[in-house]
Length: 374
Image (cartoon, rainbow, N blue to C red; front, top):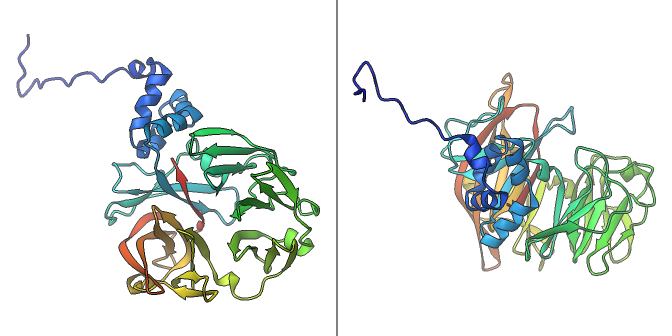
């Protein structure tokens, strides 16, 4: 046997054959995948078609539910202003593994370990589908960035099962949804002249869809940006003006007040939070008004534009972009994680961390923030 020396260093052992793992039965591979962190899934989905199929499969969801390894993840979507269907999804990871970012989408080297990691298009397919949660069930609505569809898929997190639900009355693509009083409202995503069924509502109790009254050509022809719920009403924010659907009276009217100033909203423990005028707000149902979250002077010091907020395990997550120079082609995406505490009629926030989490092309804007059980 040849002895190693300085001129003849020992050879490293050969890497394991990739066929060894792929030759295992699918049920064993699924059990292994279900036990590892989902932070590895985006990269694993690029290994092969079989891996991609397993990672996107319902069987893996069911296996993770059975093992109790599913957890909430925060996702952010950046969109091109010139190409509305050019959407890039990112996942927020706290001190993730070493990751090689995609071309033109880089992680700030000054980051302390909190990053937005790009999601490969193959893995982000399920994120492209619009989700809305009613009770224990999450609904996947219509088509996203593909062909319009009437399909509705329902995932029941209590039993870890996904099945097809009652189809919508109209095929939709990139529609907007919201949940209110146990019902699911869907608007837009269809032709503007679809006056009789431009908006519809789903009742899980009766498992049926019902068309809402015609909101009028002004709203149907506008660019609808967000749906928000408050006090039993559905507020529709568009590029023209804001409208409100009165659910109890089954009629539309123009929304008064400063709804347009609410750049982003979310709900945590039955309390509605929003970001507007460089501050975080919470809605006080007793006085029927918005009140500022106390203790966030550190956050308010940062100049913020194009803001989106969401929730992560009962905490408030705030994303915004910051352009350092007028001549630069990129900008920083920042994030703050805020814990909340209620007391004496106030809501106090504590900034646990605040950091730049991504460097993105300047033309892209934050368009959506969501949390999903993965």
